[in-house]
Every structure is written in structure tokens, then in C-alpha cells.
Amino acid sequence: MVESDIQIGVFYASTTGNTEQIAEKIEALLGGAARGHDISKEGFVALKQYTHMIMGIPTWDFGELQEDWLAHWDELIEHSFSGVKVALFGLGDQIGYGEWFQDAMGQLHDQLKSQGAILVGYWPIEGYDFEASKALTDDGRYFVGLALDEDGQAGLTDERLEKWLKDVCNAFKAA
Image (cartoon, rainbow, N blue to C red):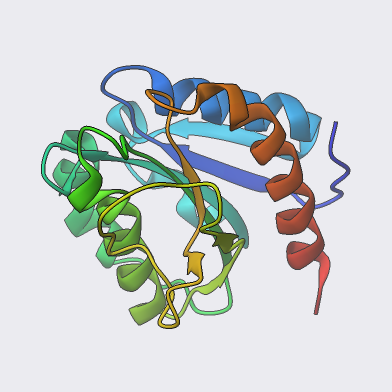
């Protein structure tokens, strides 16, 4: 379990169930500090309850937003994230869709940044094999969140998730 004394909202949507499973793992690892919110059922009603959030988004098809994220996007962009710390995790398939790996996470990152969010939890690109991604930092050395590939690298997920969550919780605690 990862230590956190901060209340964290975990927002996600999932078509195949992979993103939901990761969100549930995050909740379990964070214990009582985290509460999950499936946006396909709740939308973004609970955003106002948190100053610390983790958001999970899968990239669908050719770099597109997942259908529930797309359906609630207008609701998301109406919220102010000024001063809110947010960490992102994304799911994608670097072999089958290597030209668009994690593009939806990149779109979410850019949107939240434009709304004043303090984004934390960037993740190194070492150990991945993809062609292109809109989810890279300007220097191309990091993803803008934890990049997961349950199709090709599921065996690395738990280790990556635990390390990333420790980093995220430390960033959430920092002033």
C-alpha cells in the first residue's frame, strides 16, 4: 500500500474494462485515501470535492478519446482546475496503434493545463516501443502521465503502478 493522508479522487472511464481495473488497483493501493468515480455513470459531478485527482483515460482507435470521456468533455472544460494537482494514467496499445500511443492522455493533459491544473506524475519513456505520441513532454523524454499497455506489457503494470503512485503521492504532498 502507498501512504497518503490526502483525499484523492480517481476519475476514469473504460470501454474494455482495462482502465477500470487500473483505477481499482489505484484505489486499493491508496486505501481509504482514494475514491473512484466512473465518469460513464457520474460524469464530473464530484470534481469540486477534490484538490488532488488521478485521471485515467484510454486512447481509442487512431488516437481518439474514449466514448465516455468524449461525451462528458464539455462538462470537464467548464470546471476550473486552478491550484488542483492532477496526475494522469493512460492505456494504449503501442504495437497495434503505435502511431497514436497514449494520444488521449496527451489531449487530456493539454486541456487540464490550459484550465490551470498543476500536473504531476510524468513518467519516463524508457521500456516502451512506439512510433509517435501526443502524450510526450516537450523534450520527448517523458510521458505526461503513467503510460500502460495491457495488450503488450501487462506484466509490467503492477511494478510501474506502485512506483508511479509513490511519486504521485510525494508530489501531492509537496507545497
